Image 1 (spheres, helix red, strand yellow):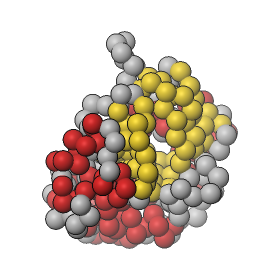
Image 2 (cartoon, rainbow, N blue to C red):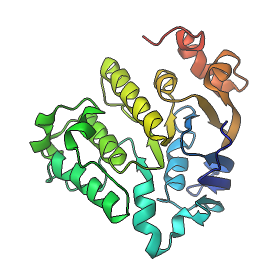
Image 3 (tube, one colour):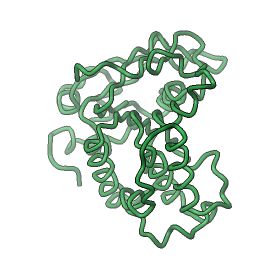
Image 4 (cartoon, rainbow, N blue to C red):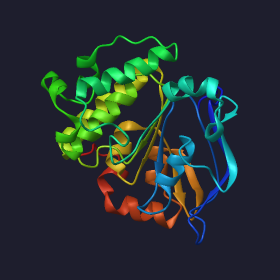
Length: 259
């Protein structure tokens, strides 16, 4: 892992919904320029952890800080800056966006947020859409008319438009056809590398993590049960959950290119 100082840190994070805890003491750090996968089977709490890391939910115990300040209690004077620098994209895509607005207006809103936070943007909607393989003709489409996969891609384009320090992706591109998913993943990876954006991708999709990340954390039983370079974890899985995921995609685990 990089020696660059962590910009986001989670310490002893617990969370639950009235029953047994979903998260039971998670510790992790995220740095600009790193690409980290959060691997785990469906239902283990990946989405809950991403929501907490992004400041959308408070843990029942523990804390998450961004540049040393709690993300769930960001001072009002810093909120614009944090919203531009720490972006989260959920599986459902454009949550909280007016579906009557056009794709162009949605992307321009992100550029505006970035400028208000003092960040430089190129205001290039076409380039923003190209990263997620959407042609310029989509600018006039209203968000409400988009398919699930198109919404997911617009959500990612919108998040990247602010050139954040960290981008949190929760099961991204699940509604996108496999071949196109791989193309978009490669474009996203190229951009975050070029701009030094930190990336956390929560997914049970090994093929996607193969393309987007280098280091993985395995979430099971409410905590991180193993971690390491993606290839090492896949070739020598230690936890039953990891082994089950690897057994489902032996080609990826064996180091053969994703098909």
